[in-house]
Length: 207
Image (cartoon, rainbow, N blue to C red; front, side, top):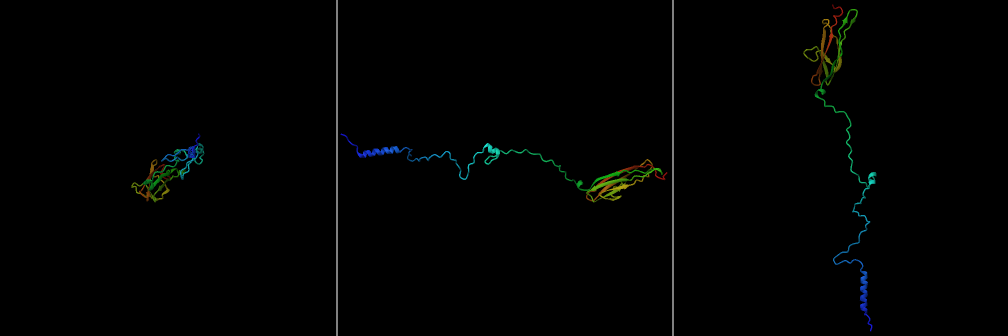
């Protein structure tokens, strides 16, 4: 005799079959959280407020295009200092005060000579000088006391003519000394020059 299954048993079997086909994915266990879907590998990550900058290429570094990372700075060779004048030494007290730049013989003297018919006139002595840093000058002639200005006052720069007497013996030498002094502006400075002339004869009418 053939027995037919009960309808309730058939329904339970169908439900179990359907349930086993639907459960194809992973099932979370009790107390575990299912992992989210993996991110797209082609996506570019960015930080909030910051834009990622691509790494520089050799070409961009060579041409200096934007985005290139500058290489290490190359130190410039130390250049030579331009040639210039050497600073002069500071002025000394003597340079800043009175100074006799020069006192010299500009023309040598000569005594007269010759006869009444052929006579050579005497040649006067000429001295010249220059003073700086003073208010004036003073000249002394044949003064053994070394007193400034026994001959007279002179300008800071000038010249003076002197005629030798030539009254000594024939063949002798007549000599005179001229001393220049500074006046004002600081300590007194002095310079001396000596000039000589030989006596050639007694002169016209002299026996």
